[in-house]
Amino acid sequence: MPRFFFSIVSGQHILDDDEGSDLASLDQAIEEAHKDARELMSEAILQGRDISEGCVVIRDSARELLKVVPFADALDRKP
Image 1: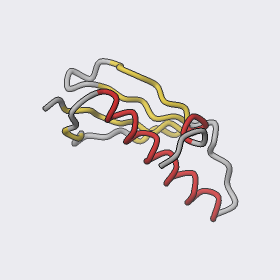
Image 2 (image 1 turned 60 degrees about the horizontal axis):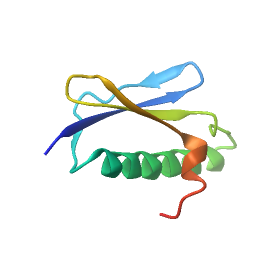
Image 3 (image 1 turned 30 degrees about the vertical axis):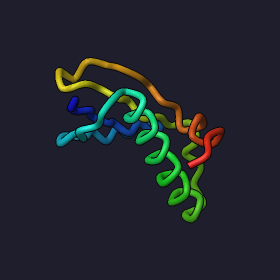
Image 4 (image 1 turned 135 degrees about the horizontal axis):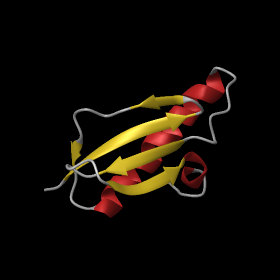
């Protein structure tokens, strides 16, 4: 099973994933990124912050860029 790494980018802040997650496919990794984005935006809203311009960067085990998932894309999808 491939390992995917997720970096959270919000404004000037980047939070890198050093452990990664074993997921079946890139599509599953994208779904995980949408879930993470919704959770992060929910927490930010409760604190009165708007982080909808952020994104999740998905990389493979070689740390090669696979996909950039804007937080706003998570709003258009059902959980």
